[in-house]
Image (cartoon, rainbow, N blue to C red; front, side, top):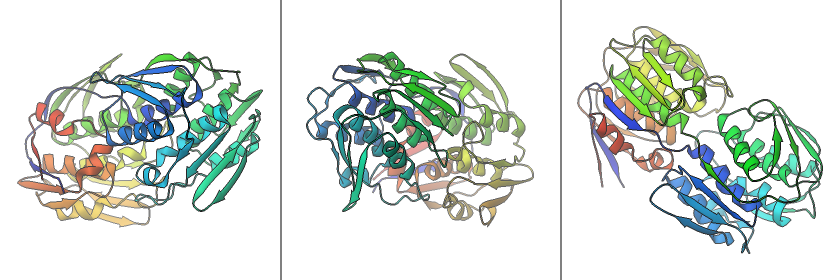
Length: 417
């Protein structure tokens, strides 16, 4: 099993390019199921979750042509197997995103229920309830969702909870439904706006993406298009946080500050100096960081996917920080690993109290999920001595060429078997 070996304790300085967003690429790949024409996507990141999604689509019969320029062309004209088997879904919960497009375009789908998730429950009941409200017949048996619909019909859907993949699934399905669909209590994430922009290029009629009410006027058919996947805001935030924690300086190319307001506000509060333009962000940290309190919540509030990284920042900051996690019930699993590195953290329910200390110590640690992996990498980069991170396959799900990019910033980091 591969591990990362990091020799930390030095400021990170330099310039890197931000990759396309995983959480935007996955739903836009599924949008290829809505048309018989070719969908061309650019800025697709080379990640484990993306390759899993492409494998899933390929076994359905989707023709896929990818090159080394982060471009992927997909055609579902010969789709023959509208099934997502458990063997693929169990490794990537985003596979549920094929349900809405398959049902809307092909009239049927058989999708495995996702199963467990390390960071907490992620129910798909909102997806199912929304599709049923649009006229789908759905049965759940033997661990699979069996869905059929001769033609979906537009309706008003009020979601009980804010769900990103639920909003994306229903928005794609509604694009080909008969009549108007109104999604209320919709998720507002930038990745949903990115998907809506792709669907509109394909001929969909969508208004309100980025707000909590999205209106979709169904059309008879969608066509192909070319779409650039948005930059990854969580990768961007992770690098900005790492450089802030190390008291370094970074210039990020291909980054969008407008998708990271909550994160940038907290970095400024920690003492970072940040400037940005349309597609770049520059951060300079010339002093030790100050502690910052934060509370995770759906966009545009502070993202749960940045909580672990900021916990590391707070662990070496001046003062005491209170971090409250409201999205996932098991998202403090990195705490025990950080405590192995001498971090002073106490957990009380869904709140972590972090007392900043002068430095972390290198140690052997184990990654438990994607963002926990990123936090341990940051911890290793700022710790004194050697840090060895086990189970780093989690990182490959969400960070493209992370060792290469960190090396460009002066990090001493190596992957070993």
